[in-house]
Image 1 (spheres, rainbow, N blue to C red):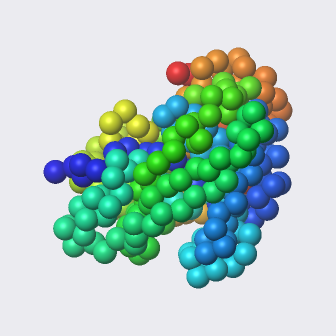
Image 2: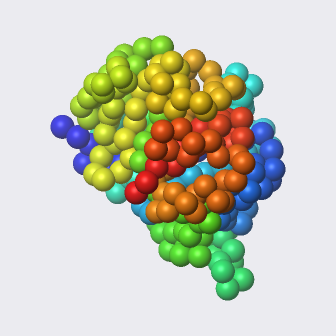
Length: 285
């Protein structure tokens, strides 16, 4: 039975080494990037968001080493930049944490936190969240998962931040590279009570819930087969590899990406080396 208090993908977290430089990279790719946010001293991190509907991307960087961000720092040391974790939307984080506890898993949290937000009119408000994480060791394909309850959606989904020159509208798929797609997909299904589905090329898809983006587990060779001509330098054999983004206008996408964009079949892609370790594949909406 699917979890009742946790629905599909909320956002993908791209871990970066230099937060401000990463934000400028994504601006140059035609994304509207939020003002920089700073988390609590306990968390020791800062972020920029790239807002879509109903999901978003988060560029996350470590500002000060803390016990809380030790796993993120270990990820950067081991893996380099890229998709470090993926969040689900939590309807109720406390109830969601109890749901996974009832399945024999020990949740981390729930934890309440907030960050200041500068609104378009110049006033400062706050974005408030309540999150819980699945145990750190439970990371299918090397990607950690957690759930995020938004207490103040109006300070996160700000209309002025949701329009992008590259016409990106939402995340359609999160692609995770692994030598064992079926095994990793089965791991995720045990954590979120969803069924895996084999795809024609041998990859395995797991729906995240509702109309949200799907997880796809695939080998590096299968990834290369899906996006021929796109350099995959920097991607490891196991870990978050790509985000498939729906574009409302691929002509606008091509114009915004310029020489960085690589046409591959019906997609226009940004190689991972040009997007902080994450292949970006824009497809028609």
